[in-house]
Image (cartoon, rainbow, N blue to C red; front, side, top):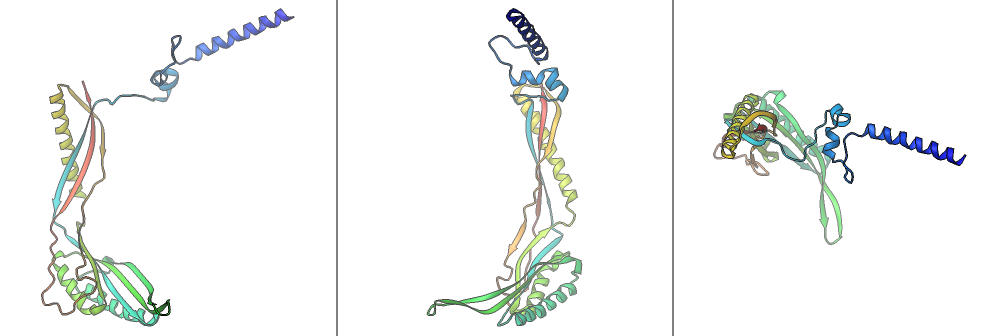
Length: 268
């Protein structure tokens, strides 16, 4: 009985070894273990899954940059009013009246209603600290209403600033002015084309210097397009001066559209 059990055990072990040997993805030499790339290249693993592993960079990698400048055709004014009073109701009333005048001036200077967007509206208590009593007390309330107005005639930006300051008086707040292009797509396309040409030129130069033959491009990727903002802060500071002796001068300058690309070429 013992001999029969040993014989059956030997046969079962032989079957297991045969099956395991048939399922092995690669031939493994005695005393060594298969590498990751060897397993990946095996038909039973990488071949069916389409996976390619490589421990080295393949080909020639270059980055290209393209820049295009344009004159802004819109100005974005961030402005509004801020009022303080003993009560919320009074502060809100004063702010509403001043803001109504500001909106009328904007529309009177050909700023359409769709180009006026509220950015911030807040009501905060105004606190005062009394040292002698070692306590804080609410002495009033502050209402702030800020909008962004899109000025489609950039040359009128200074005129709009002056008009808003005049009707808003001491309640006027003009925070920033920035410039943009209403339809930036054509400028991005031109910058992208220049970026690809720049990458191609670099690839050719590098291949010539290295003494290798440049093959086809096998990978192209675009980086984040970037337009540095042109912003002027505090056109009127914290408070506008109604009696402005000289009209406000606004200079839009130029915008720069920048695109970067990454390309990889085969080399031989």
